[in-house]
Length: 257
Length: 257
Ligand SMILES: Nc1ncnc2c1ncn2[C@@H]1O[C@H](COP(=O)(O)OP(=O)(O)OP(=O)(O)O)[C@@H](O)[C@H]1O
Ligand SMILES: [Mg+2]
Image 1 (cartoon, rainbow over the protein chains, first blue to last red):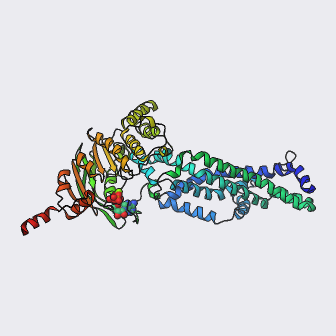
Image 2: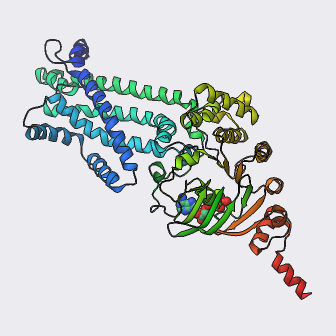
């Protein structure tokens, strides 16, 4: 027990690493990598998400291939891969931090793309029809009617993805980034008898962040419930209505409308 | 105003509209009826090109819909559409629902749009509900807001796809009253409805569609009392709960006598 208290007294090290004497690290680094990756991959992911919804095959197929390939690859592999790949392609070294950020951004882009796509598809097709038939362009309909609704649906998924991305940032320890996990390992190497306490400290660090995020998610969900999106009639969504209608793809459905 | 010339449409292998020829002149009120799955919705949705056609030609207000140069959005701005499930934008209040298209498509200022929206809400008897979100309105109220939303674009054609069939019986009349008042304004109206009393009162002509074919186009006084076709007679007697004998059979009976 004293061991644990002793580690807790040392908590600054877990939070920000050796900063200000050395580089910043610890939990702070996990959070900043996760936030950076989430921001970068949100925008790129949205492009891939919409791309996948396109009925033009030369747009949708590359997006599908990208999304499915990345989702089938462990984050650890991507982190490793970029660590070796970037220097050999660019011919110069990128800092460990940026190499990790790029690798994890590419990893999260695939997931964000799927969140965006699912959010858009969750909007009943009648919304698009109503907007179009009032004379709006497809772009206006998307930006004024579809996306504002879809975004509300996506928020809980974004938060839960952020939580899993945050935990995923711990794999960057393999390329030597001094984040929370690495700090714990350093501590256990210096003081092998304090191993148990060190591991508990790491767990506390991850738990506090993850739990407060999922609490935030619940608050957001409740707050956004004002407009109660689930209350309108669920209808089957057709992706082809969202971007240019594809006549060739109109497959027969069972139930007449 | 609206002209169908040999229109054919397929959904994959299903032939949904078969050789449709129909001329609707300015200010006419047309009621379309027929059994479920007959292609009524599809027909009405081809008028504002929400459903594309594969063969034939549709001319609306002098513009050919099959001509790729026709600006679909500009044409749709002149055609109001009211849906069975209302399709109000759930993230906007009643007033905002009505203001959106006039501002974004017609370029009205916020003040002008608000004025127009308030006037229309008064007209459909919902002046006190302007700040309600769609979920806070009853079905009948939602449909009247939806009609006001279409009217805000000052359309020359209004399309109604079963506007009352998702409503409780006691709410239907409010909506029908609003529609009846519209027929006196010289707007060309195409209405899908099974409210035969209403059709009898307002329709200039009734179109009966079954299995993708137009079987009869008649004055309401003729089609309800003296249907020419077996299938029309069968349908009408089901809807009106009175036995009807088609014309050609009557003749046969007369001859036999
Ligand atoms: N998006 C679609 N894809 C494939 N088939 C469709 C689609 N929409 C309609 N159909 C088919 O086209 C036919 C006509 O449908 P439509 O919706 O026009 O009928 P309806 O006369 O409006 O029927 P209801 O009275 O039930 O609304 C039906 O057989 C239906 O299965
Ligand atoms: Mg229908």
